[in-house]
Length: 315
Length: 279
Image (cartoon, rainbow over all chains, first blue to last red; front, side, top):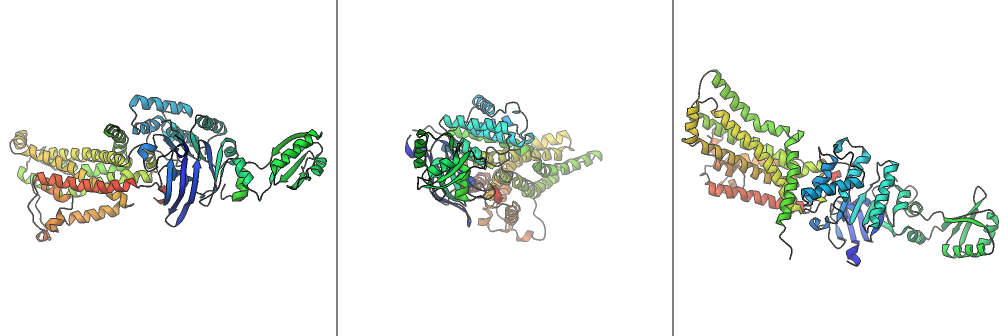
C-alpha cells in the first residue's frame, strides 16, 4: 500500500443536515499515528467521524479510508473500529456478550470470537466485570467496554469519539498508554477530545475544527509556527533576566521581553523562533548562564485559543 | 476470483438471529404482542370450559364457521396485523430509539444482509407466537367435544388439513405483513400512521375492484383459509365477490408482495444514516 491507500482521505467533503451545516469543504489526508480532532461542541468532530465510518453520507465530496469507501461496510469494517460517543447498549447483555456477539457478526466462529473477546477485555482491564450486565456498569466501565468492542477485531483504523470521558485518572492514564501502544503498532488512531492537555500529550497530529470548517491541521509545532499573528512565546529561566533582555533585542523579530514575576525568568515573544534560538546559543557561548529554555505556547491549548478563540464554545 | 460470500452471509444472518430473536421474545415492551396473540385462546378456552361445565356440546360445523370468522376478522386482520406492527416496526426504528443500531452498522455486514437477518428474526418471532396461538385456539375449540368426534373430524373430516391450513396461513401472514411493516418503518417514524394506512387499505379490500384487491396481503390470506368466513352486515352488499385465488397463485402472490416490500426496504437501508438526535 502506498499514498492514499495508507491514509484516510477527505476530498472536498460537505455535510448538511437540511439547511444546517455539519462540515464544509473538508480536505484532509490523515496518516498513521494518533490524530486528534479538536474543536468546541458543534464544530463538526462527531460529524467528521460519522462520515468516516459511513454512519452518515456526505452531501458532497468523497471519502476513502485506506482506499475503501465507507459505503462498503462489508469491506471497511474488517479493518475499522469505531467507539462512538453514544452511551447506549443493546438491552440485557453482559460486557462479554456485548463484545462476543458483535464479533460473531463479523463472521467469526465461536472459539475465535470467544478468544478475541477475552483478549479485548484484557486490554481494557475489564475481565473482572465481563459477566456483569452492562446496565450495571459505571460510566467509566461502559466507556471501556465500548473501547473493547471497537478494538476486538484488531482494526488498523480506530476511531474514538471522546474516549476518555468518564474515566478516572488511573484508567485514563492506562487508556492513553493503550492508544500509544496501538499507534506504535502502526494503527491510525483518530481521537476527538475536549481535554486539551491530554490531546497535546498523546497526539502526533491535530485537526482543529470550528463551525464545520477545518481551521488547521498537522503537527502541533507546525501549526503553531503558521499562526503568524501571534508571535511565539519562549520562557527562559536564568539568574539575570534584565541583562538577557538587553541582549536579545539585537533581533528585530523579538517583539516583547518581560521579566517573570519571580525575577528569575524572561518571557520573550518572537516572530522568528529559529533565529532566536541561534542567538541564545551564541549568548551561552559568550558566558550567559541559562537554566532552561522552553516554548510557552507551542501546545494545542494555545493554538486552539489563537485560532478558535479563548471561549471555544463549551470547551 | 472471490469465493461466493454465501457462507459468510449465512454466518452473519445466524449471528443477527441470535441477537434479535432473544430480544424480540423477551422484550418487556413486546408483552402486548403476547396478549394480542393469545386473547382468542381465552375466548375458545372459556367457551369449551363452559360447555364442559354444563356437559353440553356444540355443532362442530357451526363452531368451525365461528372459528373461521374469528380467525379472519380478528386474528388475521387485528392480531397478526398489529403484532407484526409491534415487532417489525421495531426492528430498525426501535434500535434507533434505543440508540443501539449503530453497533450493527459498524460491522462488516452488508446492509442488505442485516435487513435479511432482522427480517428473518421478526418472522421467526411472530410466526412462533401466532402459529402457536392458532394451534392452541384450534385445540381449545375442540376441547369439549368427545375424543371420538375429534378424532373423526381431524383424520376423516379434513380437520387436520384445516389446522395445517390455518397455521400455514398465519405463518404466511407474518411473512407478508412483516415485509410490509419493515418497509414502512423506513418511511415513517411513527408506527401509528403506516399501521392506520395499511389497516384501512386491508379493510377496504372486500369492496375494491378485483385488480386492486391483489395489492394487499389479506386478499391472499383469505384465499388460503380452509373455511370461508360469512360476510354479513350493512355493507355486505357492497363487497365485490371474487373467486378465491387458488393456493398455487395465492402463495406466490403473497410472496411477490413481500419481496417487493423487502426490495424497497433494502434500497432504504443501503442509504440509512444514524441521526439519533432526530428521532
